[in-house]
Amino acid sequence: MILPRAVAPLLDEYLATFPCVAILGVRQCGKTTLLGTLPKEWKVFDLERRADHALVARDPDTFLRLYPRQVAIDEAQLLPEIFAALRVAIDEHRPEKGRFVITGSSSPELLTAISESLAGRVGIIELSPFSFAEVTRTVERDSLLARLSHRRAKPVDLIDGLTPRGGLDAVHDFWFRGGFPEPWLTPGDRFRSRWMEQYVQSYLYRDIKRLFPGLDEVRFRRFLELLAGLSGRILNYAETARALAVSQPTARDYFDIAHGTFVWRRLPAFSRDSVKRLVKHPRGYLRDSGLLHALLRIPDLEALLSHPQAGASWEGMVVEEILRQLAARGVGADASFYRTSAGADVDLVLEGDFGLVAIEVKHSSTIAPRDLRTMRDFLDEQKGRLGIVVSTDTEPRLLDERIVGVPANWL
Image 1 (tube, helix red, strand yellow):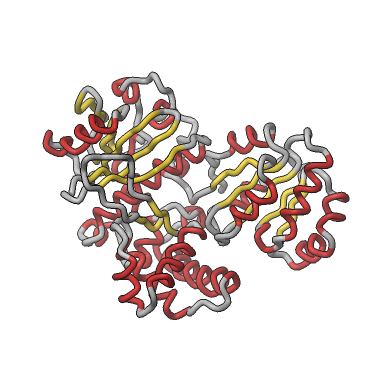
Image 2 (tube, helix red, strand yellow):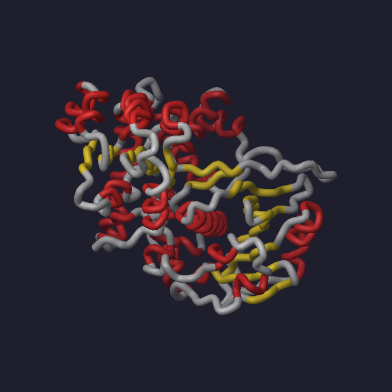
């Protein structure tokens, strides 16, 4: 069973726009499967396969002269020389579009290599594990986030006629399981738990060890376990360094590795000029809720609902769902969070061509008027466009002239 991916139309659009398309994302999120949807004329070379790696690595320039178009190179970060060779090959026939697709994962230096060698020649798509829209097979349905990109849409326009993607039980099931494709395609609690354990081992002992051979494996494994407790929190590098018995620069390096390998999402603090004192440290989330719950040893949804990390986990899942859907549509947006030293907080701030939008996430079915005070103040001070409160309500509703409430299963 193959679930349609929300990025498929964006891939087609970029192939018609750029000579090369780069699909980047965490390991096992479905990049190779997406390559399999390319037309049959395309040739796919997997650099994790010895024969393919030897063929390409022997002389990348000659290889690209022999295969000048309709070529996909999977896990391109395993051969850094390929990026310079691609630049030369593209420039020989610069007007031609849709010639190459490359994929990459687990390399903090990958974006740097692409930007330095392929700037202006490549369209970048970030592929994540499944979104809730994908597992419910509703990616083609009209959505709040699709409407948000229309600058003139008013708050009421975002929810008028909106339909749910599934029931509340479905979104809770997705929250617990996360979005990695393999556990969805092979259901079962035992398989999921075993797969997650092997995934962590593979990430740690295969990818990270290969990319950073001098890394202290024991401390980095402890760091991964620590990340589960830090998900949703404002980061304090000094505390993390003390907990791991490492220096602050080393702790920062660990966070950079996790962020650069698409396991961790670092949200910077909102930093416009303000009369208020703002928290400036970043906040972070483990990007997949299923991986988070595996690291926390949470066995089922019932245990999750009573877990101390439940609120932060729900918040992280909703934030990631929003950002996954926007990325799949190719909608550019700067994401941050807002918090004052007095404790006023907005979980997610999005700024793009659609304006400034404030988003609050609550695992609650009722929203009290006092819950909107910080959002109203933020929108007033920053001249924001509108606010969105994501909850477990039964249906979308207008909470204020500039604020809409939407259930998570309606996103």
